[in-house]
Image (cartoon, rainbow, N blue to C red; front, top):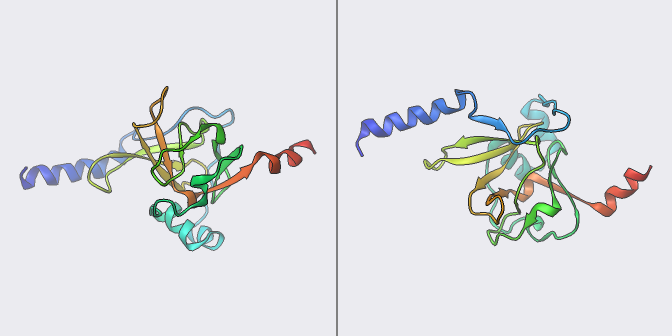
Length: 170
């Protein structure tokens, strides 16, 4: 590979987010989500330093650093910044990677884009309401979809169904 090919590759990678369709919402929500346009300083004040770094600086936590890897109760996984529901516990599975993994998100609640941070292209996903970075999608998940939505645990909050039921009743 020569220098010209490498430089062209970087130019293409930099332009991809500008091309329509390179950032797209996954599925259709029953009600479209209105984005929150808070300044980063407000998010920083609301979140722990580690959660802010992951959600808004696109960092990655160490494997098995979040207790959500081992969470097995029924419930819903929310964005840690804006509390938008992102995953149902029925779609969580043990991927043995050290991060919470899901087979699919809640339709219309995440958007994907191509990420070239490690040179090799990956599909990155974010919360559609606050733009917080959640993780990456890989094509090594279980059937039928074959997708592994690998999420940072610090980017999520878990609400067990037994805590949500009283609020739903009245």
